[in-house]
Length: 99
Image (cartoon, rainbow, N blue to C red):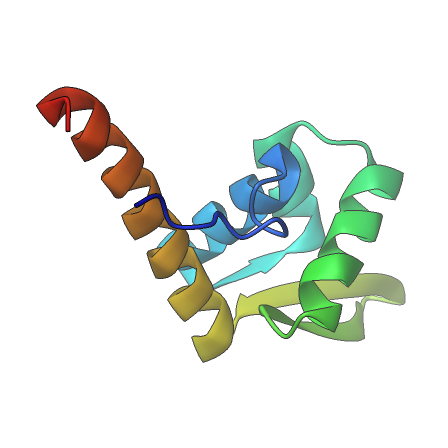
């Protein structure tokens, strides 16, 4: 009846990061931090979890001698996001149809 929701994406911050990356495909850490309003430490932890799951690809480099972290959604991450959205639609549809 109800599809399971991906526990990795059910976290508000991780869902926010994935949602942003779906729209822009690739983003710098500072952009994600600004848009989510998260602390650097918390965002870093959540990015690591998404990366470990294979949902995003993280590239670390330098720009003008400053560290630069860039995140990019993977095909696996995009598929997981689409499945999560479709599962939510099933919950909403069920509630609206009453069956």
